Length: 261
Image 1 (cartoon, rainbow, N blue to C red):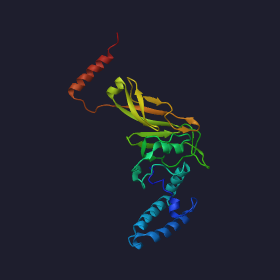
Image 2: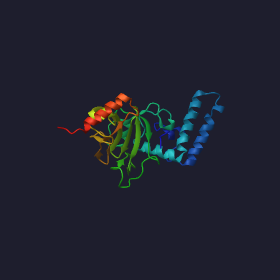
Image 3: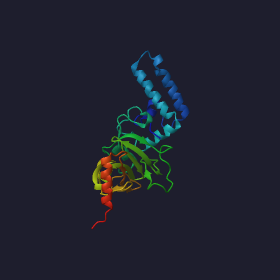
Image 4: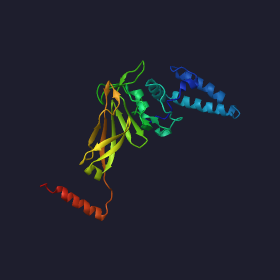
């Protein structure tokens, strides 16, 4: 489920209610404030128009049980989310992005704030929030900070500004890297996005599609364990080849099949 609201805004404060307010109290507060600040009754007052938008946005989050649960979970995981997501981002795409180092510093004890990778999209699982720890599955449980923090299996997907996806499972991070055929054969050094920013990963010569490479210590921290970043290599094979390229490829394959002396 894509996060389509701004968790940096204190929506409870906007509506003037407590964080434990009932849905009825939230509705009453919204109706009262909306009536007092509605554009039709404010004579074009720009300040009140802006206030009305804030009130409407707050009610859109707090008046929806699922969104409210997500919102409360994020706030319990460290309070305000840094970076400011700019008034909501339908479809999961944010305007300014969020600093991954700060974001995961809130979710994982011992996280490293100040990372340079920026999130353009932040997805929870299908149900949103943090599913309860079931004792199996993906690695150790990630503990969210806070007085009522509980062990939970935490899995999320974030999209960095370079377009790559990072999947966080427990303390470990997983990402995919696409490289051309020649680089897989000859080896190369590629740049990937991690929770700490950009990192170099060495692709050994002769790497096949599906090969996993580990960047030690480049994951998060969960359950008292420091995680690693796993990069899965995928080969980009040309869809079309001209006749000369085909001839050279056949020649290359023939040479590769010859036994070494």
